[in-house]
Image (cartoon, rainbow, N blue to C red; front, side, top):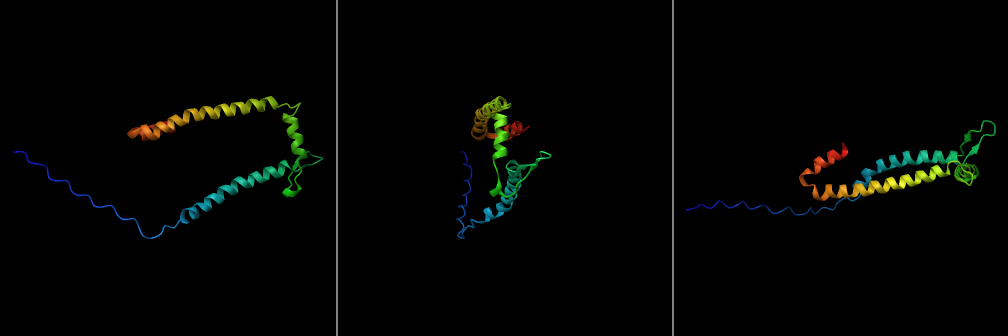
Length: 138
């Protein structure tokens, strides 16, 4: 006579969802200081660069003088420099064109390699996903 194994214990029913409303403003409020910090340290240097680009040039020393009021920005100096660089007689026009082609080619190559690797890692790697991620990072 073969004895049957004891019956498996019955699992407890899952907990019912909480009745209290979720505070949807909590996570954006926690993220706000970091977002403000990053925007400040991105927009402030960008504004300084634009103030110098659209500023004036000192006639004696030929150094840039930033104009901090955007209403007084003058694009003449910027267009002069840009036409000297990439205009009809521009020195760096071919180099900038080659650089743009290289950037586009490298970006496409990275995307063509990264998407299949990411798909394999997310879907098919299984228990080896951690090892694969560590190998990719290293």
